[in-house]
Image (cartoon, rainbow, N blue to C red):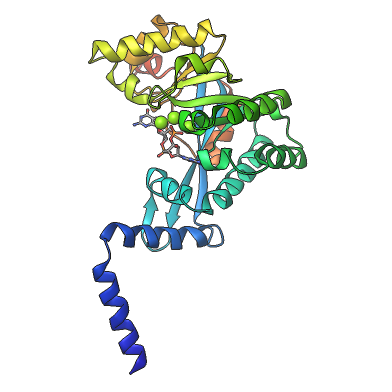
Length: 287
Ligand code: C2E
Ligand code: MG
Ligand code: MG
Ligand code: MG
């Protein structure tokens, strides 16, 4: 019958398609319903400052737990959403949720990732300002994370957008710094607050002279330009110590905390300081 025939055609078509494209289609289809199905959530990773490990902010990170196939990494689905308009729908949801959680934290900021396409969206600044005002949030408590790709493709327009955002009081962080194709000369043009050193360099620090040299250079460059520097992906005490010696005051990584649920983030925010994991280890059991 017609139904059977239809199914056969679909199967044939499927088999002829590249596995990759099929997966992409499935992810796109699933993502378009993820919000309605309540499959999305945010987790928050503390950003700590100085010796005392004061928690000054949290990065909001999107999680997609599908009913049918379990969790799918943002490293997989964000690039697919980025190729379609879905990224706008997801991004609006992320921003809305991130602003809500601020009410539970005494002083910290929330750091929200924006993909290049979101950043270049028509009326990006106006939309953002409207959303933040409607939520009654001080823009100084919102950090916008963008990557080098977002700003270097159309540098003049990006510089204008960043200037406006900074004027409004938003913080601007350049994410995954060192992995893109930024010209150091151009960095001056952008109204930034901080550079986030990509975790691949932190990871290599203990093993390769080159990575350590790059980390040192970024920290010096940042400070020379009057910018803050956040090291991403700090996983060990050795990395923490090396970063301290290098003069890096802001850090983020599994060594301090993995991304946590909204409830746990709230407890951490109220406590205001992370227990130094190294100091905690140093305490002998029974003492
Ligand atoms: P990112 O913005 O560079 O986020 C940092 C990533 O490193 C996160 O991965 C975080 O969980 C992970 N991470 C943090 N500390 C450590 C560590 O010590 N070791 C290791 N190995 N990893 C660490 P995640 O959550 O899987 O996100 C991956 C990427 O997906 C993000 O990279 C960001 O580019 C994108 N993304 C996540 N959430 C959003 C979102 O809401 N909007 C947009 N546009 N992109 C997002
Ligand atoms: Mg980020
Ligand atoms: Mg990053
Ligand atoms: Mg990264």
